[in-house]
Image (cartoon, rainbow, N blue to C red):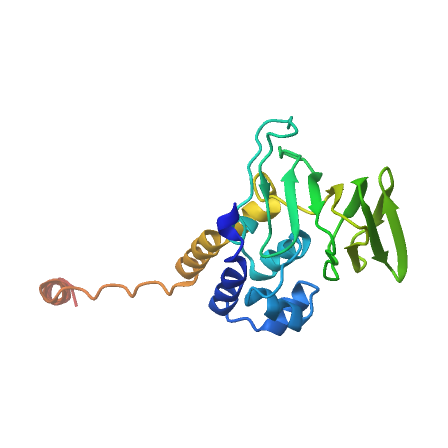
Length: 241
């Protein structure tokens, strides 16, 4: 997954320009500042996976277009055998804990937060639950700080702007569980985006076909017209006076 680290910003910028969207439009739709998104595009800072999901939605692309993440078809995962991945040049690593299936809502990751890490301000739909395994972190939510150490947890409405900072002397590890679709495999929301271009094209074709003007009736052939005229003339002569 390391091959993605230095290319996420470039992908965001390329897709934004292809969509003819401004930095302001994408930043606003993603609940980010223009300055922060500009730094992400230039690979000057990292971006949290939650914000990356918002950016993917703003650009109407599947999350996998911006970030390659591990697939997990089986329901179980095991310590030491999971693949870790990063989102851009940031000091945070993720391990996928959850699978996806028809109707599944929860997404879970194990987060390794390096010393000094501070996230951007984030807001997104759904619930978020965190459980600290080790270290010390501080979540700021609705102008209130929550300091958490090993064994502590926090459950909140993630549509309110929030951020997390590692305030401990070393790395911190935590489990994050939420309803935000962190993986696009098996999630209808992202699968519909991957099918959208094709669907829009098919819809447009059907609409064009349905609204097309009917073809004009073919004009009668010249010899057919002459036969019709002669027939009428003969009929007129035979009509009794």
